[in-house]
Image (cartoon, rainbow, N blue to C red; front, side, top):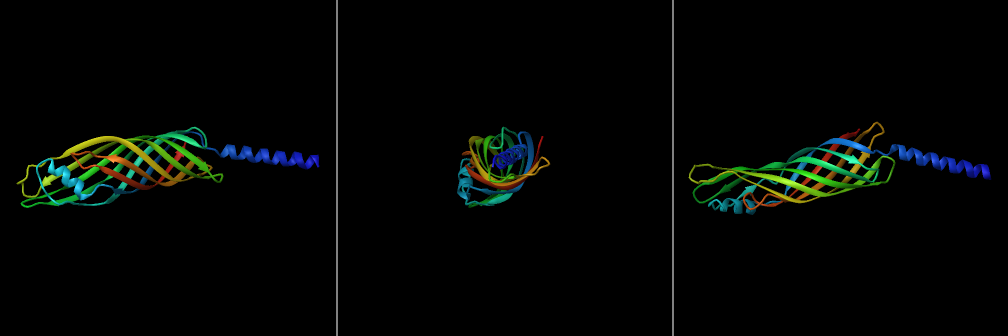
Amino acid sequence: MKKKLVAAVLALSSGVAAAQSAEKTGWYAGLDLGYSRLGLSGGDIDGALANQGFAGSTSIDQSDKSYGINGGFRINRNFAAELAWESLGSYAYNSPGATDTINGKLKASAVSLSALGFYPFTRNWSAYGKLGLARTSTDLRAGSSTGASAVSNASGSGTGLLLGAGLAYDFDGGYYVKGGWDRYDHVGDASTGKGSIDLYQIGVGMHF
């Protein structure tokens, strides 16, 4: 009986050791690619153009590709800190008015610092949540189709919350893949239009 108990304890100990050895800690870096969904409407662009004296009714694209890079430090299997840069998309718009039409693009990007919490439910699979702050930069490119309206490009920036969630898979060789959602809740200002942007991305990376 004692031999069986000792064997069970040793087996359990070896299993815990194996699980711990699979934990990825230390520095990591990765790339993200996916698409974005714009939380601004044509009315938001109307307000930005109205600040320059143009009255129109804007239609704007609501999705685009997104991509970015990130790097961080995995404290243990459950927590990490991450710094990232993301392109939040480029959205073409068209704003016809009474005597002219304004065309252009809204472009946005972000730099963020986040804390990540991981919930490992197998040796390799984890669910994660993300909470951080993002500094966003937004450009509103504007051009008159007739030259009759004196509009110009505008830019804005802001700091807001970044929220995210997803799934990650750690390979034994030090590589990982992930898929998730991020929301940037403060993009733009009154001069460009203001709203949120959601990213849906897959990512690849490696632990160092």
